[in-house]
Amino acid sequence: MTAPIPPQIKKSLAEILTEKRKAAAKAEAIAAGTHIEWNTEQQDAINLGRAIPMQSFCLTGAAGTGKSTVTAEILKPLIQSSKLTQSTKYLSAGSPGVAIVCFTRRAANNIRRMVAPELKGNVLTVHKLLEFTRDFEQVFDPAAGTFKTKVVFYPKRNAVNPLPLSLRQIVVDEGSTLGTNLYGMLAEAAPHAKFIFIGDINQLPPVGDDSIFGYKLEELPTVELKHVYRQALESKPLALAHRVLSGNPIYTAELKKDWSDHPDLLIRTFDSSLKNDEKKALLVAASVLEKRFRAGEYDPENDIVLCPFNKRFGTLELNKWILDFAYPDRAVHEIIAGFETHYLAVGDSVLFQKDDFVITKINRNASYKGREPSGIPCDRWGRAKAGMTFENSDANESNPFGGGEEFEFDVEALASGEDTERVNQASHVIHLASVDNPGLADVIISSAGDVNSISFGHATTIHKAQGSGWDRVFIFIHNSHSVALSRELLYTGLTRVKKRLEIFCEPDTFVKGIKNARIPGTTAKEKAKFFKGKAEAKAAMAAAGKESSEAEE
View (cartoon, rainbow, N blue to C red):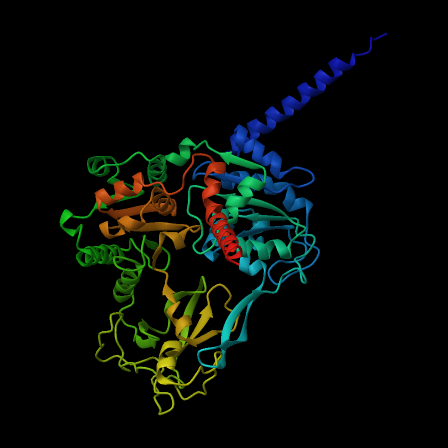
């Protein structure tokens, strides 16, 4: 009679069998090139993300620490386990009960390339998920004593009309760019969902609002990925980004010797004579871009030019130069908007309300009473272009730049009076077609404020580029940018690139930027205080003001 196998031996046999199966699966994955060895921090994040019941948490780490790979691993079981039971405007019933949201469309497109096919339709901007729409409201103007029409944007998804209950998980990527106001709307529309906040605390907080990331890093369980993998640092731009982040200055000699010329990184320094000459340095920058454009090494539609500033040696002037050499044959309208002048053409790709649009029509504003534009086709600098005509050239008395169609204004005529009209109205009505949603009706703008908010996206600030990525990135840093530079700004700009980075800089200014740390602390928890510090400071000042007024009473 065979003696029974003791339970501890049975267990050990089962463990042995399990280990053999794991080893076989590992060998198979290695052979297929899909095996990943998770470090302790990454495994902690995966365990948090797969916790039952699901748990909201934060995942932070510098570029190259594997945030995207870890997130993909967390989402694997959610793709299969949870399905949407109803459709929304952008999410289909039966698709995974997971949404990955970003602040910008470009950031969403970048993530869409990395996720599983099942999730591509579930990657969208926060504004899309909340189904933001446009409306008009009457606002009383005390100065004029009349009501005027104001364009407002509001979410259709809210506490009254929430997102589906089957939307179980919302992943907020590039969490440092999401402000508290927009997050409040998101939380109101999805009180049932769990959140994963993913971001790089070494980057910049949003402009004009406090980052929700700072609050969540202190409120929720947080995993900070610290290990930068060797294969990530084999990218010279990424290696440079981490060198900048370390605060270890790169002086002129090293800049020229060790970082000057690589397949994926090119650094060139401005001549010292251009240090204090913004105009000449700008001409050099424009010349460099034009040479790259002629050689097929710069595509204005798909690559990006970055600067710390909009004005002075900044994106406004660089955009004009780019448009001048890249699109020379367009007849450009001179458009007066309040006290500013713009030069825009039908077919221009522009940014408006943080989205990408194409100008489809430019017509004379019949209700405009301010200073008249020249009416002569010109280039981006306002210089007349001989022999050029406007695309809609069938002139008539009522509409000298259009084909005689009736005007339809979304914005009502504002208070009468030439001065008021000059400030509040633009000389032209501009039709914008959405790039992201071609089926939507044109956005029609005629107020000076809306026209002045139009910008070109060929060159943009590093702040606005946060969360997005491009194949080729060109960064210009001049001495005039000194007051704005910090290592976090430089780091953010350097990590926007996927394939090739070109930097043109004034060396001393570059060093100053590396030395200047604007975000204090070394850990995620310490840096989180900076992200939420502004709000707390405002609250403290408000409280102090209240106490003062009460004391006076």
